[in-house]
Image (cartoon, rainbow, N blue to C red):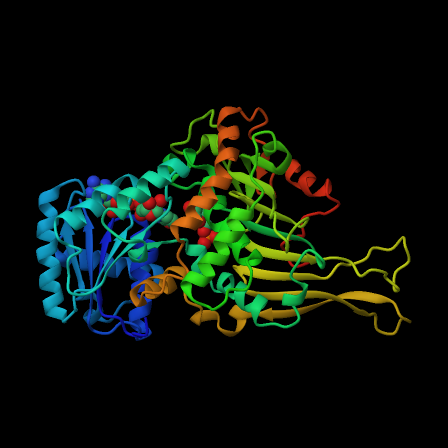
Length: 495
Ligand SMILES: NC(=O)C1=CN([C@@H]2O[C@H](COP(=O)(O)OP(=O)(O)OC[C@H]3O[C@@H](n4cnc5c(N)ncnc54)[C@H](OP(=O)(O)O)[C@@H]3O)[C@@H](O)[C@H]2O)C=CC1
Ligand SMILES: O=C1O[C@H](COP(=O)(O)O)[C@@H](O)[C@H](O)[C@H]1O
């Protein structure tokens, strides 16, 4: 774990796909540029499409140039890339892949360390992992690790089955389940804000916090992922993983130490303490939405049901809002509101912690609005923290005015803030699994989400589409908070 320049071969299954192109190759290049890879590394791309090493290198070079908007001058870097054409279901070609890996390891003096990155559809995960073991690709002199992309199952049962298949070939310590939100700078900052500041931790409980809101809104629609998304929906695509992971980080107890196991074990406790949804509760605590036509950033866009590869009568939700209760000592009575959706007003992920009002406000008359203190954690696109306080209005006798203390992380680190995939790949190479999800977290998240999807799948949403593209979702999502005397804090910084 202390190896700052890990020596390893990264084998990417699905190397001709979208994820490899947009995220993985550019991230590997950035790690190389920053000196985080030694010369003892190689990348072996695997997919069915025919490629020579040369044509693959050309393809990788182009994708990196497109992503970084720079000409890639360093031919040395690209010479570490190889390609093997393989159908994941064909046993014979794994032997040939193993031969190629051994040759590449000899050439670059890599001590048998291998990362198998499955950037492919989940139906292949079991087949690939069993072949990796049966054909001897995991039997090396070094370490072997498996990186698994989401979705990890469709529900608890399918996730369990998938996990059992994978565990036939890899131990839990070797499995790195990616949740790219855990690689985001400000998501990682949640722990630091909470546990390194004496002013927050004592207040971080139901005596001082009124509610916590997490919004992750997107302007994009489903793009070319309609086939996947129409069988998934926002609940499985965003809530089961990213949103619940952020809830867990916000709500967990301080870990005994900052080790992978200690942090994960605290997160699991939160996920297990989520108040389970009975089928009758779902309508009370959760709101689903689907976008219709509308205008997003000045452009007219089609409704979800008109998107490519989407059922024209689809019942799939593209928006979810929910109220989560954590039934433990610290959080009893504090609602955690979450909201995520496609084709919303803006691309933004923010966490707002709303503190309770002071017991008696001396500076306002009863008819005047009291501004609560808010701590806003800006996850993206801006990265930072804003603390909303009240201060004296200049000149006027003892009148107050809301003020903001702002810290902008990417104003300072800006260009150097690493992309989530870059950080997570590097963590995996160093054997640090802290920012990957343990099976227990995955299982607890599915257990929470499953009753909601069961209800939604079995009842037609008669009001779909129920929000206009370019809006902040259906009205019912606002009512969810209004019932509790709260409202969503706006995302555009004017609050
Ligand atoms: N794209 C994204 O932004 C994200 C993707 N993911 C997940 O990552 C995974 C990959 O997604 P994405 O890159 O978008 O998918 P793509 O459909 O773009 O790529 C799929 C890849 O799998 C290869 N492939 C398909 N069938 C076989 C086979 N039988 N044998 C060998 N290779 C095969 C394809 O290559 P070929 O046709 O040449 O065989 C291609 O390289 C999925 O699990 C997805 O859910 C997760 C988060 C974000
Ligand atoms: O995992 C996913 O995340 C993206 C949103 O990620 P972000 O880093 O851009 O916020 C989402 O668009 C996609 O549907 C989902 O699969």
